[in-house]
Image (tube, protein in one colour):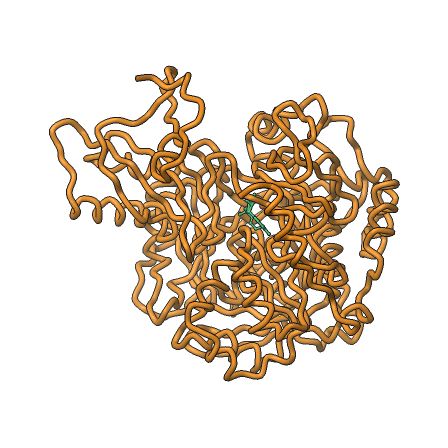
Length: 636
Ligand code: PRX
């Protein structure tokens, strides 16, 4: 498609917010606020930070002396829990529902802020009694049940960092993450419900603990009740511990430095080993709550539903922390959107009076496929805003979401951000005129650009690399145990300018609207989930018959992208359909079902550079029947 055509198409597609939305908006004039925020970035963030509770105020808003290892609110003392829970207990919000949780089989649990505080305090004391100390990293591997949020909050309260591993990951992914974090304590569950079946988390945890021997204590929540293997002296049931005298409901919230670690979250990158992205108490508290409040106009009347999993950054920032800091009522759901029928989500919106739904394009496309009759059976009139995250949303899905779910009255906040950014970076506000498929404009304080390899801005409408030119409080501080990699991956390409390289390509149209195109590195977004080609390849190569493998992403109607893996077998072996299935199953067992390749292609050779690097872009171009581009480095 030519640039001109794109221009014309996008110009035709403005969606303006209604007067109702504008009247309720906290921020009515984006441009004025934005200009002010970038003129005095530190002043802007200091003002937002002062809306929160601090044990001690900071001395310096931003310390850039050790770029790119920026520090925010230096000298400040804070704990995210003081803001997410403690301060709400001092006023009427103690009685407000913090969490409404529905299990897949239909069970329901609710927690007021008061009740949530009791659970978190009790579990904080349990962790302390197990020897967990300030600065330790506790690994959490759980289904979407309240105890997952409680475990995260309890760690933060006592000053330990958490490392949540998504419950859909499997043995090798979990083992690797436990080991990198040197975790002594693992919190898990016997299982969880997904599409009417039990996911066998404890067995996976048991196998992972065999591979990574650092775990001394494993605490298991009983969710599904099936028989699981529990090892003497290592394994404890959550419900047993919570009834012991050690589980007192009085637990002090630890005073933390603003720059102390709140959590690490592993994410996939260019190389094989996942990176433990580090976020801290001060900046992350300020950034998640500010972005959540302004982008979704949060008020006390809201019932907020972020239908992600807490195991990913979206769940960390916008199921657990941001909404609790803003005193919202959160809805959390354990299972699949189409179980037992494709109306599950719509029924839940009606039942709980959800006012804001925040989900992924994949989920929308998945539900769209069942047709309008399912949502149309339900009263969705409580909704006032919608949100999208994780991958570019195609205009067709956007329009369906807007028309069928939002009834043409709910603007869609298409938020672009990453594990590394902590919170929304490019996003509309409710008052922003929208174009389907564009994440629109930068959030306050952020200056972004689309540039070429040298850092020169590309022309309007042209594709280039997305960079963030200025620091923000929610930015990742480093990669756990690997500061060099942090510098190398994000900051080296534009070292002279001091810009953050996002790893995405994008274009900016003539109205200044930003359109994210997709990843330009070896990261694959499958159904919005982030995976690394190297992780998939190393899972394949761990199979005894595989000698070499290369994974690429090809477009997929529902998932956005699907994994296609090219495999060279060991000498003398030949591939067939059955082996293909076995290899898919092997990846699923090692990494998790989300990493299961769509297709395995047996091959005799792979295109490589002279230095032996696999040229995945050549494989991709060939598969798509496109121009293979510059082949000068290709070894014949
Ligand atoms: O490619 C972009 C895509 O997701 C990547 C970040 O993945 P992750 O760290 O798992 O975080 C996902 C949730 C914040 C980005 O580099 N991405 C995220 N949001 C959008 C998006 N692509 C297009 N539009 C979005 N709104």
